[in-house]
Length: 463
Ligand code: SAH
Image (cartoon, rainbow, N blue to C red; front, side):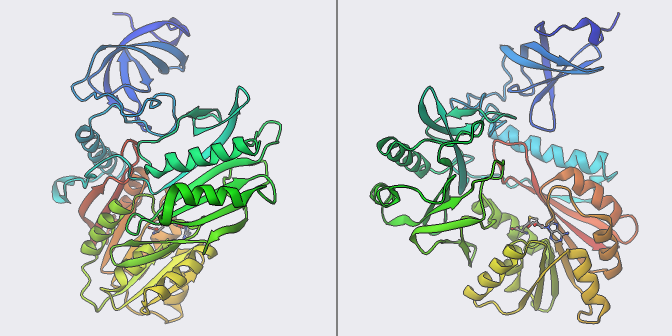
């Protein structure tokens, strides 16, 4: 049979495809002859018709038109704007199937990229959420204008056009009240949302955070001016609609024509400028700018697994490379002799030091700088002797070569690798496990339900 190639498919043509796999962004994958199609909003097991959008030599993108036969794993998306919004990608997939998909994704990366034979590795069951909705403790809603009216929502995928909504199913219920209060306030005092094309208007974003353990709420209005007119009235309305849980209201000034949401200056309008939350027994002080895990319930489970893998008895020296605001360091400190944390962002280390103080944890020390350089320097100058455990939690790009070489020189008894990208995890583990370490255990933890991102934790031990 003659196989078709790109010349045969025209933009706008309708194709019928069985969805047999998921792509890296959670889109469905199907084939017609030797041609591979990426089709958003489809799930494995669907048979669909789709409109050809763009073709390359051997693959293309098509837009879902109709579902001819539903996958048994297909569910009705809970969110009415799930298809157009750039946030969730897996709203139409049953949550159990989503967890299976994520477990497979990590295992496949370890096999394919890492070259691991997983039959010798203890692979634990994925830790899913009890409820995959309402789990995010932080949301940043862009504001814009449509037909002369202020609107808010989320950006559509890959664009800056706002998909309007008044609630987001993975965010907290209070978001709805905050957004309505801010929109009513803008209407009453004739304040416009920022328009990035002709750079006018005032309100750019509203950032909302909640401490899940404490119930405390924070609202920060990001504006394109130095002041927010009538801000005392906004404070009054927000306090009236949110009650005593509201602990912080601020404005953040961002006058740059940029995609970065927050500017450098934050002015507190109400409260102390921060909220507090707990992960396990450890208290964290969070300001609008602080980095803080967005899913604290699952983060606690992730850290508990990291703690279990670290096998601490109270005698160990631990290094937490890429420590951010010290979340893992402080979580482990109660079970270790001493924990050193290293992080490249100075402000995060200031938070880490403060967080250690408010928790009365004094067996920790934090360094600002490149983890691989600091740890080598401290070791070579004799400041540290044996390292029992190194924990790493790098950004998506994973570890760089120097970090891996350093770890192989320092030879800790155990390495606990916390990863938010399983392809770079697999690449790094391959190098770490070439001679001196063995991959012993793996647990995938679902931190981001409805998206295709995975978080995992691995234990490596010396061979
Ligand atoms: N472990 C923390 C944060 C992990 S995110 C938590 O759970 O909250 C990864 C962190 O690595 C970020 O804070 C980033 O600023 C930091 N980082 C990136 N490159 C680094 C490097 N070379 N050395 C130290 N930290 C680095």
